[in-house]
Image 1 (tube, rainbow, N blue to C red):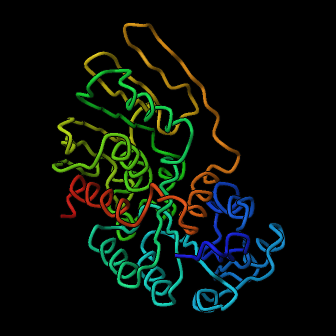
Image 2 (cartoon, rainbow, N blue to C red; image 1 turned 180 degrees about the horizontal axis):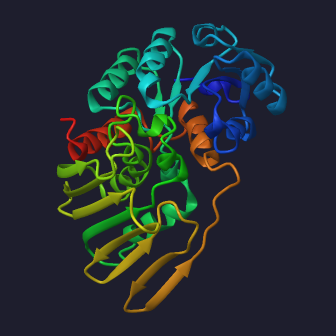
Image 3 (cartoon, one colour; image 1 turned 180 degrees about the vertical axis):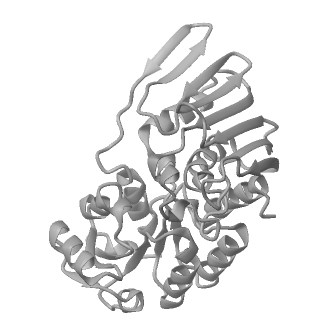
Length: 330
């Protein structure tokens, strides 16, 4: 934990893997957070690393992750590489004794997730996972509605996410997101992880879960369809279906209570809807330009000891366990 006496000091961050996710979603959030400074980035392609640093006004860039991780001028590290390298780099950051945020999912499987969590816990170093939806005002409002009994006792939640095959899928071109060696569940790993983690945050940990998953289209090596049912520790039941070869896109979550219902989308930019005996309330709460901003600001507060972050290594590992149970990895 960073000493509270460093409240006015700058915490200097380095990014390992400055790809697309860091351009708008996350990288600028570290620059906009008071007390944080994005000091260095690493990418294996030196021209791309230099270009990123120039465009974002970052002082240093590297092509070697070890150099960045062990740089004495770097206090904390954000790992934004594909999931198959999260453990590899995460264990290096733990060994260096620096706080770390890892992109979601924490790892391609629960076993690797636990290994990462244990490495940081052994040194009492903070570990965060970029499940930033937990921090967004839109979803915090839903959690508030649940907490103020707007729909009574929660009974059940269901989520359906579907989308057509993309032109890239149909082309047969390589995409790491649909490579079974990197993401067994394909787009399920990339997208469903966000929503399942959010539902766990809203409704509590899941104690039982089972699923069916398969590859229906044969377009790539990863799975492209899954269904699941689960039970939260609170007694709330849940069902989900995810299919990435359907005619049209749909993203609908419904939380059913004894006195009402809440409906929302995990990914679509739509209002959240509360329905109960008082009528229907629709609220549109915009996301910030840099969607990880509130998540990163929470990291700052956690490092200063002012609060506990909502997305830690432990919560990320639990989501990984749920994902593995659905996909059949465990």
